[in-house]
Amino acid sequence: MTALRVLAEARWPEPGHHEPLPPIPGFTASSFNPLVAETAERCLRARHGSAPAPGRTALLLASAGGDRATARAIDDAAASGGRVPPLLFFQSNPNAVLGHIAARWGLTGPVVSISPADSVPGLVPQDALDLAALLLADGDADQVLVVAAEQAESAGGTDRAAAVLVTAG
Image (cartoon, rainbow, N blue to C red; front, side, top):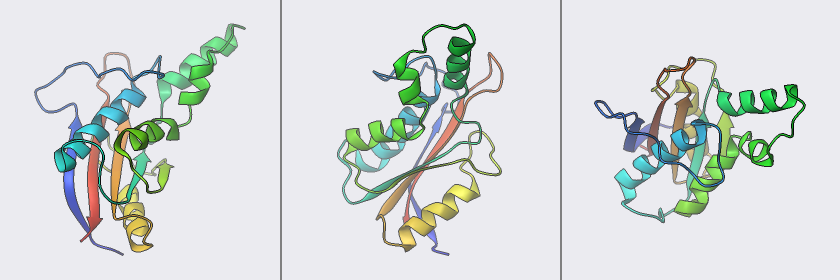
């Protein structure tokens, strides 16, 4: 297995900070996509300052629960017999937010989403790091941005995400 070197890290929320997540145009009804995007942005800015990022960067999203709020919004609309807003179908694909990040930062590596077997909110799971190592070993990317995101299980809970930018080390 390829050893990894961490180039940058980010977390949401940062310790002692509880500001609201910035909205993303085209994504509605859920905190999941803003959670992923903001944590990725913080990590990429920590390494590169501003877009674009140099080299081939892969994006890897790990989430055991996925976008629960969008799934609930689609279920509620379908159950009521109402029309399901088209944006909800677009954002129900976890790669949609990764495409947003890739376009904003000019990232040209592979885009992958996984649902890890073991996930602790606020930590990057080992499954994701192992896959990042494989992407690097295969030569598919020069670096991999790994984002692990989990929405709170209950109302009033805290959404958590962690991101690491890694390269072969």
